[in-house]
Image (cartoon, rainbow, N blue to C red; front, top):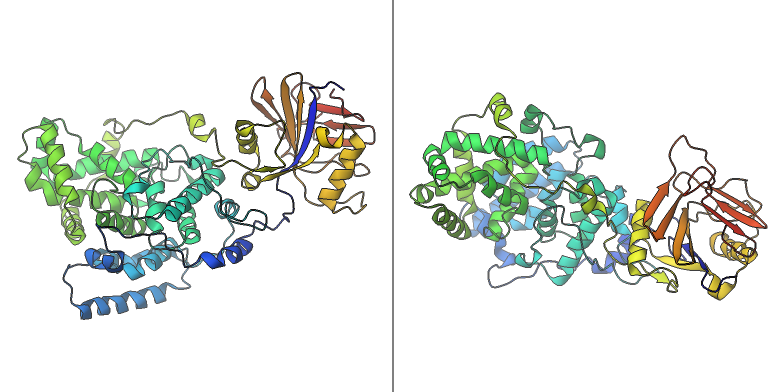
Length: 549
């Protein structure tokens, strides 16, 4: 055997984890002790205990009025319990949202508007990914996310009243969404701040449910591709096309309700659409007081993106007398930024959005005629650049792999099925420790995957990685079943794939319709791939002494 040839088999889910160890029920029981954790922290700018008063119709509202509003919201939330029709709930709460929501009921209101009060226990791909980032029996603490996805949006958590635990919780939710829904990673700009703002009012699990519930299913991403559908359908998160349509409608609406302001901005070459695009992507975080951002989320969850656009129009309507007299583009931007930063009375914005909304109506045909002509935003079209790394933390392998480095581990884990990307690894067999013996490999697999029981046809779940290093090359395969002799002649499913890390990075997956020969185990050989998944004609072949062929 060549001295520089090494061989490892890694149990992908992590040693000691049962198949159902990722269920939300187990995670919920593990996290029971942390339910009282406060994600939000106060600072000199905001008193969270009395934060609701800043979002009410009046700052100096008498205590009896506060109590009366609380009773109304309590009854309204109670009537929403058990209602599965989210559109009906939004209709019930629209007027109350416009009048203002007490801080103590905002978390319940947001969950009601998104339907998560009803489906909180639903096991979706996003929630299963999130569950895998939480503490378990093997790992005593939640994952520390190293570089969360930003979904092509702003990521300014330091501007929000979140503790370090709250920021970590935000990152875990974003990572869970990124791993389960890679199709959303290239463009979903409101999501980072929406998750962070949610954590001011609720726990991490509930915030993740809200993020999950407002995303369109992958097959329905183009549901609002038509202009009429985009302007009429309820959708919270903006796709590129939907944002283009909404900003075009905003351009036409501002011409109707603020003609003098739009004329001045056009003369000064200031784009209202680009300003509003920044507001929408950030949910006003970094542009306005926190109250404005919170109220923006109220409107967004209740009325969708079109409601948020009207909310932005309300800001221009409210400040137009200060902007119309500006004589330079930079001066106008400075006045707008200063006035917006001092705009604490969100009830004034709500009233302005209602008044401006009654001034004329934008026609679908007019939006169709102009959409795409304004060159509204620059976006990186390289989707691969956003989805290349779908593992946002460093998976742990115990004991440490002798073949794979940190970057190699992150790369291989990004190729695994979604349900496994959130799990650590455990080295079942390594040639340096266990020798170059195929029979020993089978024996250790039997011990780890089937509990040592001599059941030749045991079908205990056991996804694993075979990794080889020989003559400077690192290649391997992911197996959806574990190697064992005496079983059926062909093991594995179409999830299996082979890969190369060095000298080139490549994943070779099985294609439907191709021969389904994934793994064949014999006493004197182990063959992976054949014509089903291969780099050449045969992917991997190992003899009894673990020589690579």
